[in-house]
Length: 365
Image (cartoon, rainbow, N blue to C red; front, side):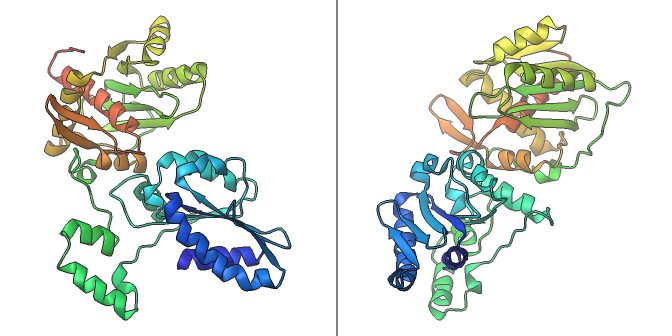
């Protein structure tokens, strides 16, 4: 158990360590293993075990605590030198970004995310960003067949012919499998070149998805002539004044001709304020009947290669993970559980404006 060896080594150096599993049941074997390894040191009086809270403490102040995604809020306020997430892909993104990541700030700690892939969710995004980092993060990938144990080798060969190909590739080869999502050819269309300022004579259309408390506000801007994405901004946890200023700044910087903003929930007050400042804002009301053609138009743009987007890792991950489910009333679209779809919605709104403008018609639900 690689993660177990790492956490126990850090504990023996009196570090503060968190070992995290997706559920309480997942964490039980981790705790049993840690207790068994620590027992000789406990007998020698150099460590103590708190079985109720599942914490092992060293005499010099080191600590290993076991946490689970079932109650991840219990980690808030803690501070660690090292955090290890086992089966990280099964945890929701918010557990990592909102609860776990801040616990590393006090000690400038390290995190290790270990997991079998689970489609192209937030863990995939982290993996891709780490591969391209080279300074602050690193990523590695190893299939089960690399394990030299004979019984693991036999299990690998047996699974090859007995499980579906997609399952084998994900569970045994550790590949990130693109799910049966809505958007295909995403990477083929991720060829837009970032520019710093608008090109004179061009018209730019913006789509904005306004965040609720848990999501992100995203601004996505397209060149209406080339249908290339030129700008994307994603942010959260700002007040209304700062949010509106950031949207207005993007509008001014890119000489936006039309900005389309979803008017659901908190979007309408933002629209009213921005209109009061003279911005050309077109509201879009998202409903079961209006969302389907909105998403399907963007889907067709990717299928036919008529849109070019920036190769932004978060945007790519959300597009590739985005799901469609057939219902009695039609298609239902959204992000998988634990993921966001803010970049998808902002891009869809911008494409809606570009597509309608090209047709010479503006019609908004």
